[in-house]
Image (tube, rainbow, N blue to C red):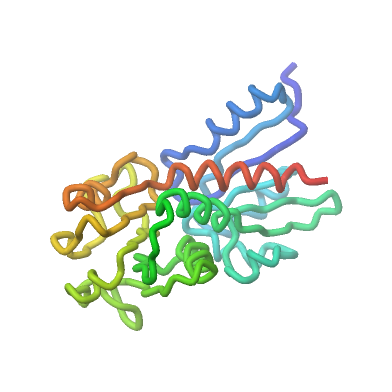
Length: 247
C-alpha cells in the first residue's frame, strides 16, 4: 500500500512543459528526510481549475505565468507585500482553510539584483513586459529608488520601436520579465536595439531555462554584464518554503 502524502504542495501555471520546482522540492524533501511531502506541477488551461486543486487538500501552491494576477479573486487574504504588488506567486492554505497569497518574487529579485549590481549606482531601468512578473520587479526597483520605464509592444507604454540611443544611454539596467526566449522557444528575444548596448549596461533576464537566453547572449556580445533568473528562482522558492512552514 502506497502511503498517503500528508504535506501537499504544488505549482500552477500554463503551460508547464519544463519547470524547475518539482525536482527542486523533491530534492529538498529527500535531504530533510520528509518522505510524507510531495510537490506536483498542475498545468491548468484556465484559472478557475485551481478550485479543483484546492479540493485536493493542498497545503500550499506556487503560481507562475499567466496566473499571478488572475488567481487573486480565489484568495481570502493577501500579505501586505502581495497587496501592494497586486500579484501572487505563493499561496498558503491555513489550518482553518483560508487561502493567503504572498509574493516571494520580490524578495528573490531584490537579493539577486543587489548581488548582480555589486554596488553599481543605477538611476533608471527599462522593464520589458507589463504582466504579473513585472509587478514584483517594479515594486523592488521603486523600493531601491530606481526610476522605471515600462516597455511593451503597444502604448501607453514605451514601445520597442521607440527605443532609441537616448533611451538606451539613460537606462543602464534592462530587465526582461517576458517569457521570450524561454525553452523551447530559444530562438526569440525582446526586440530592443542590441547594437546600442555597452559595457555599462546590466541585462537581467527572469528566464532561467536556457541558462543563457538570446537576450543575454546579445548583451554579452556588446560587453554588457548579464544575469539569468536562476538565483531569483531559488531565493523565492526558499522564501515560499519558509512561509509554508510558519506556525
